[in-house]
Length: 232
Image (cartoon, rainbow, N blue to C red; front, side, top):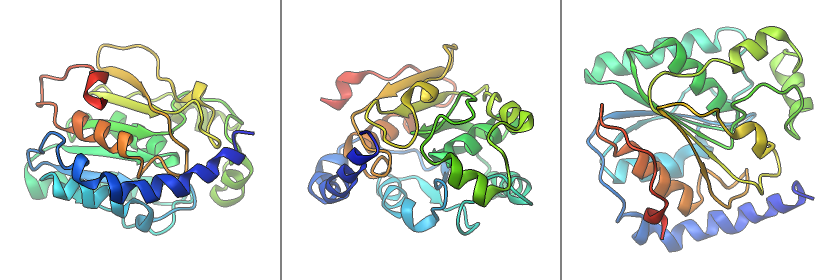
């Protein structure tokens, strides 16, 4: 049933143009760099609208530049670690990470491994708790990544939690990833934001984009939990 509701993504993509003027009223950025990671079997084209929005707000957004996301196989993770460090050196500032779906799970791992290079981590419809088959895409993941979803090493990677501010944006109407595994455990610098959205449209959903803008605008070292009144 939820998988069938993913057709809503078409309307979310269409609504982005209508909401663009409203979205530009969101808090402005401070110019720090933001690396955006796509979801499973998606590439940088899927995150272009989000990166364009971040650029409009004054950030310096970066695509991941690793082609299609087939998961943490081969040299993918070492290349991502090196990319974050290069971006940090270029700007002399910590890098914020945004990951959609599987990209969010990978962003969490990057944050956990690069605490001195990452400013905050935001995930969109991402599994943040280990569960072997909590998504409708687990067979695809196994086929393209070379990993088994019940692999203990994969579960250990999923348990990594970044020590910097972390935000999980999830939807109970997500037709791909079970919302229950997108809810992060309570922690001083961790929060969960529920927004009505489809999984495939989360990266262009106007409410999601507003929440992202609000979170990125938090002053470094002075993070506060999200105020839902900002969505009204």
